[in-house]
Length: 393
Image 1 (spheres, helix red, strand yellow):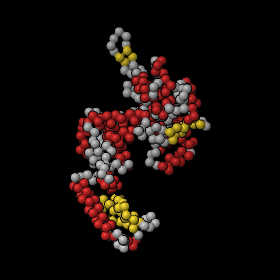
Image 2 (cartoon, rainbow, N blue to C red):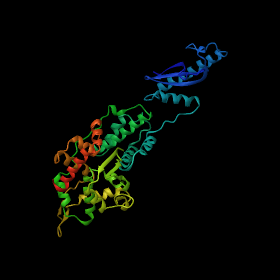
Image 3 (cartoon, rainbow, N blue to C red):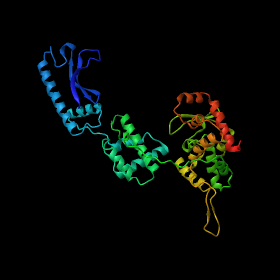
């Protein structure tokens, strides 16, 4: 139940002080101005005293408080205060006193603002979630985005468990952002659990990397394979981060950039084998020619995935038999998994250092700060993996 009480706000330290109505709801407090300034001796904690217009002011205060209390009672009975913070209720009262109807931001409006904070492939994935929500039936407010809506949406999604989980995690991120921006206090994911299935490992073994590296390929596949190998050499770098590198990202023999996904600063020692591939595909505006030749790196990534998946595929002349490709499910993301797998199982690099090479925090900030300061440790581990990938050492 929300409670109201008059309060002389002396926090400014400069008299006369403003008289306010203190609103208390679910252990939260907000203050609504009464438009009256009083000296300390003119307020006894209950009413105005020792003031030339004391009787008139007290009548105004009693009438206004009664009107506010009635409004709050009606709102509470109608469920309009459910899930709201006291600051929102104060805003509702101010709108009501001005004769305005407070318009609450809808979930769709907030989602579109939230989309503006995302970039690249991440933004595309969040946009797909928005399309799914609109098709199913977008909840108007965050009070409507409750556990029942989530269960219905989950059951409606006609896709694998892990594909559903992507959309549900996106919605959870949206709700967290709404809470951070004080749009709601409702959190339906407290009782709603997102289901997952264990996925098949998306990594090539060291032997498979060597097979891919040495396999005779068609001319158009050579570039895709070279870039895939480069991604492994560059510590499993994301294709989007790689495509957007520029010449000025190279400083003092290191490639420094900020990851699109986490916005963390990242630094890679430039090795001769990396530069040999980079020089082969040098770009004009960018370090590599990916964004020079394609509309965006997403277009290149789709073509690259398709090209990599056809390596080893062979159609026999005069018959319908097709020899299957080497890795029919491979994607650019496999470079990152492959790098970690080879580093741990073939090179004996510790999981802490692998995490640092990949840009993970590992939940151990002291260790990570130490490794970043002592770049030699990470660089030596990275060199060890490069030697194993290229030379089998």
